[in-house]
Length: 65
Image (cartoon, rainbow, N blue to C red; front, side, top):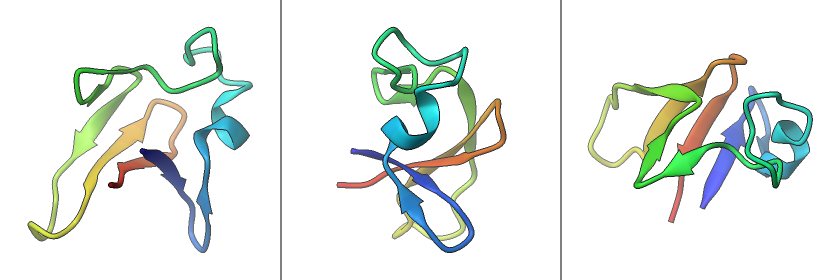
């Protein structure tokens, strides 16, 4: 499950990506094969952290289970 990480909030992608021109037709981040195609991976500081990405719009996206 993908979430958007803000300073003090965790948001569903629907709340952020609906208006993004890089989102797919459903207003979701372009996520395929375990990769965010509208952003780049951020290096994990610890192995326990979820995979995180920074989207082109500047938001931090995390894959949580």
